[in-house]
Length: 86
Image (cartoon, rainbow, N blue to C red; front, side, top):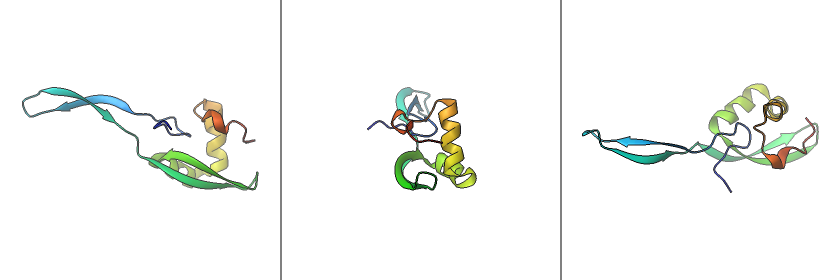
């Protein structure tokens, strides 16, 4: 499975390692992804999501229903999750 957050859409980015001599070599910056289970009270089911740590903090603050609705509206929600009626 890809290293992409299913809520925020965060994905690996490319950057440089810069040495003291200012030599540059390419490298990857990966998002801090976690597999986490969330309970949807409206659907009365548990879902498992691969989400970034910042998305987990957002879910804890706003609630899973609000975050799923916003992600669906913004278009960053994973295609597998579009069946959820938020």
